[in-house]
Image (cartoon, rainbow, N blue to C red; front, side, top):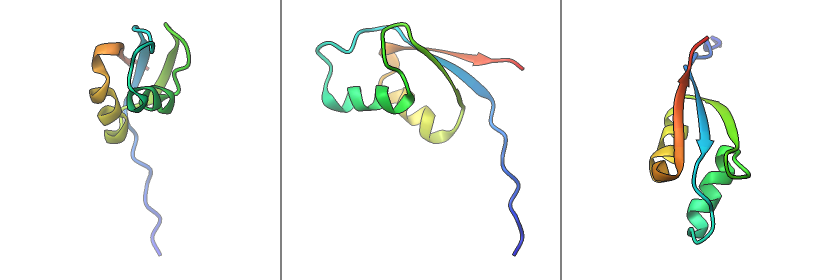
Length: 69
């Protein structure tokens, strides 16, 4: 069996800019799924399709910047 090479994705920095107060349960779960916990917390993730879909759902609450290596 052949081994697949792992595809490299560019990195993005995601920052939570708006509070979770008054948000729906689905929006809260998306924020926690991205790894964000508090206001102004930041995480670095790969720019994968599943991450971009989560960002698209709550883009009004986030600040997204591409990280250069």
